[in-house]
View 1 (cartoon, rainbow, N blue to C red):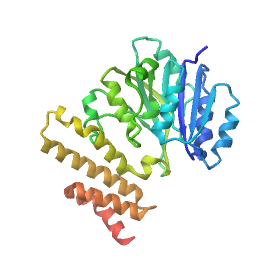
View 2: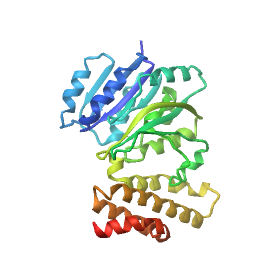
View 3: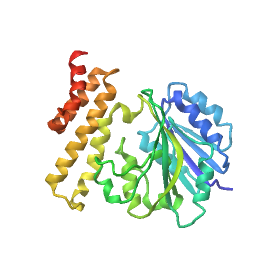
View 4: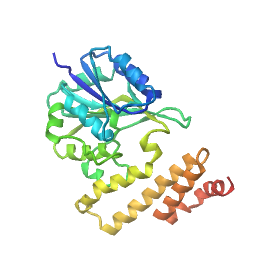
Length: 295
């Protein structure tokens, strides 16, 4: 019998978190799943861990070179046999009842895409926080800087027919390929919110998005700039809005980096200053500026 769920995990040198990811899938109270793991010839001991878990017949392991995360996920999508497809990065995890909650939600054949909340665990020592998902108007994806949409990648699930209709991830994208995929998907299907914690998202320093947040933003600009004309605001108004929002985001990155990475903090502060001097030099930023100068 074909599994109900196909979980795709791209893997590359995330051995520190990999076991927790695999355990979270094996601990599911819903057993009708396949776990497709595509590993890019990791050199950190991941292979040994993966081979131990591959004893489970529900684990399908592919170890071979790939052209990046999008390519690895696409390989998994192509292998998927389940009715419901999702991808779970190797440094994220599910709750034990995640799949059983989704099984019930997908009992309605009219529901094609489901998204939910995640528990975000920060490397910086803060308490884990529930990140509530939000998605009402797909045009808000175009305003990628605004934060109006909160789609958390490990907590988005969709039917096989959706993948067949939408196709695969764009392999020239390496940071925001999920948002581009949601854009195409939301043009064809409604997204249904399930007010449940569905995944654990680790915001850890070795992840691509944490190491290069500016690259995430640059890639979102590349994806959505061609659609700016679909919005009602003038080009000048959108430019002003995005500059101020980006300056605030870069300031946040500078604050979070100041104690461990002074060069990184300077990098993000200069990014904020470039986007909006008024935001970067506001009175509440003086403490950050003093630290940057004195450290």
